[in-house]
Image 1: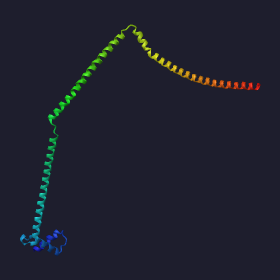
Image 2: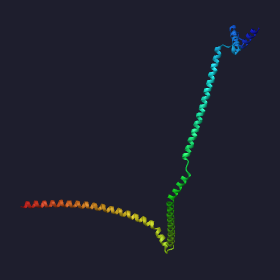
Image 3: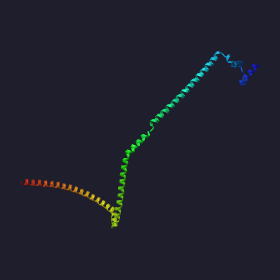
Image 4: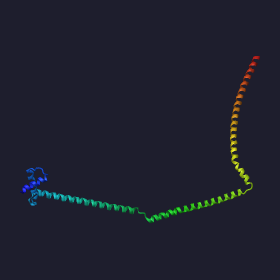
Length: 216
């Protein structure tokens, strides 16, 4: 009766398909093997499980040791980095006394030059103010002179006179160039005339000499 129920359960688990008797026997054997207590299991299976469990424990211990070593290495590296940073900070921390001495020395060197330059600028500014006042005074004197209107009118015509003077100067330059060209041309004509007169004189002398020889 129990076997029939087991067969029905196996058939139900198979989804209603037809189950062979051999398959039913295999399932029964597996269930019986699982139901056996640990003492009844074969010695080889127990040793394999113990070896597997020991290997798992050894791997877990190795992983834990590796993680611990990595954590220690990271901690040591962090300590080393912090020590290096502290050392660099100590090396490059400016010395307040040295900075104060450097600033004092710089001020001591540049202060006389700055004071001398400021004194010269002040003297130059005073001279400029005096010159401006002198020019303003002279301007007032000029503006209060008699016949200043005539002088101002004459000065107003200065640009016209200057333009005319420039025109006359240009005309004089042009006349001078023409005179030089005319002199050069006259010199050439005079030289040519002298050459022609010399040739004519030589021709006459030759003719007179020929006539004298003919008369003899």
